[in-house]
Length: 148
Image 1: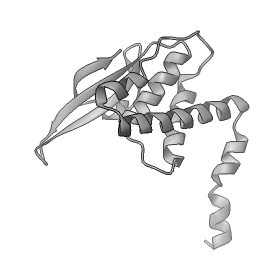
Image 2 (image 1 turned 90 degrees about the vertical axis):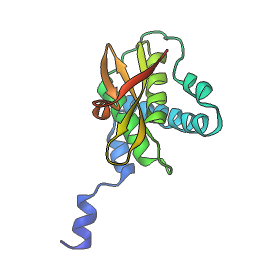
Image 3 (image 1 turned 180 degrees about the vertical axis):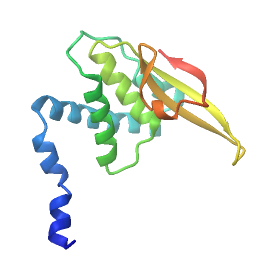
Image 4 (image 1 turned 135 degrees about the horizontal axis):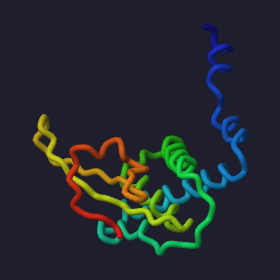
């Protein structure tokens, strides 16, 4: 496969963004902004203050497709120039959901890693008890806190 063929096969991120609907582009912008603020909060604030970022009052209900929200958080996290972990993604996702009228909970869990003998932490977000962000990692983690 020549270089020209490889470039055609891999679509540029800007081209993919242009193909999205205006609503999905706005959602992606919101997710990027919230991930940026969540990253700053996690880096600069004590844990108990940073964790409040996602626990905003539930706003007025607006139309939202959960799959679109998860897409926006994951896409924004992949394209930011820094690495975002589950905590930043969870805080941004929870805040975005709650502002749109969805009662989302952020969960903080730990587990003992048998091979490294270290404790690991993980954050995930649920809606109606169903994990929607960070859920693939949930098995094996014991919940130690839920926000709000």
